[in-house]
Length: 80
Image 1 (cartoon, rainbow, N blue to C red):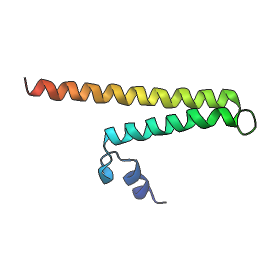
Image 2: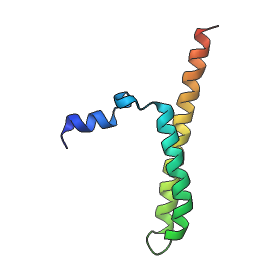
Image 3: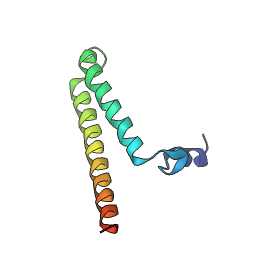
Image 4: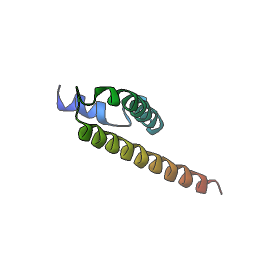
């Protein structure tokens, strides 16, 4: 895959992927992992790795929620 193609995929403004869409996808993935990871421990995955990945994903969700909240607050201020 060429650099330009990777940039197009990763650029949030590309292909109509909004931050809200990203957040929905992250939450879907979090719910899936929450359901699947316990079944994978210890046969397919170490408990420590599962916990680390879940913490990172949750932190990403929290950060994106915070950014969206700030953006919505800023937009609200424009109309006051």
